[in-house]
Image (cartoon, rainbow, N blue to C red; front, side):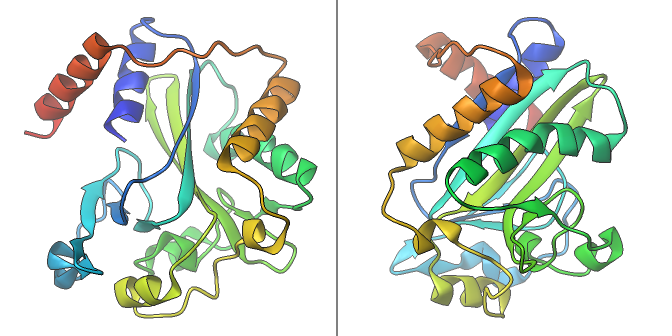
Length: 230
């Protein structure tokens, strides 16, 4: 997620274009919202199947997310009109259209922010910034960070879920989380990513250029991250 933060900073300086990226997690990790300070103490020493569960802090707000078998998306852009909720709707449009192409209907949640902040888990409640199925179960949780007129929006799409680990972390079953990926024929993450990229092309009338980060950029990201979080 330091890459997301770095891309936003670079974009503000006109040093990189608007960016869409996707990534997965190599091991179970809990990401905390930037302003989330009160967390269970046992999270700091939590292990699962003999391995430590990492605890990181996102540059964006919101509540805790357990990254375990999910796909994370990230958008960095600028110059969008409207309030934050309207920007969420603009930037989530490609997710709705992409998942619809895979046979999954999604819509925005309707819970209040007050209900959301009372829960430790991001996926316990779906606000107007999140996407849910027809039954109201949350499929995608998203969060934003604004700097000037530039915005970072990223979010988690659970594809598989270890129910026992979820219950261990949050103390309740993951019944509020839906896994549409599991209920349909086997597909690769590459298929999902390519479908979402195609949906973004259609929604925003743009073309993408794939550019892996260079060794120099990775070193810059490491330095940037250490400077912001010494």
